[in-house]
Image (cartoon, rainbow, N blue to C red):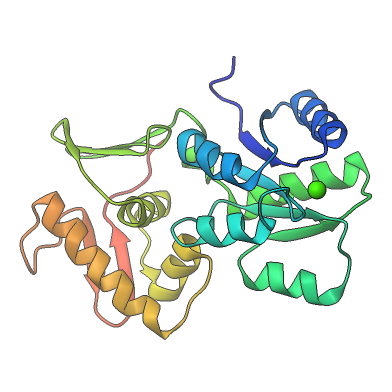
Length: 235
Ligand code: CA
């Protein structure tokens, strides 16, 4: 029963509010995971790989921004900031650091659920990445829930970033994705450094996939444009 529900990490130190949020999320069909401190949030984030995080900025052990920055170094999981701070500067700072949305307390249940649905739709797992879904392309397979890539049933050991790139391309399989679309999908933003980072990561991915230079197996490259995962989605 818990396997095909979106996991939402609720980072909130006020017990009452955390309990209300958990009940609300469960009622809406999500699986809430609660963390009352920034440290616990980072631990649970790493072990549970939630589909979305609700983040209170005022936490007892650290500013919630620390969680956001840590997560954004590697990952594009949607983060909605819940905060009593309503001034413009805090909002801009959170959005600049990669928050996907910002909700000021107090908020209504209906509004919060609408924002969660919208964030999951826009930034969350794509159709093919519904929990439990698998991607297969010839002898390559991706288990999205376990975040595992296999070739001929052998595990390919990818870094988080490499995995995120491969997973992103597989979601848009058959389509040429530009450098900026991939960077935004993987890191949440695009700047000049991203193309180089992408190329370095892609060289490592190809090496780990056992693909020789100039060979377009699994992933094709169009120089100066972007990358495309071969094949068509056939689900
Ligand atoms: Ca708080």
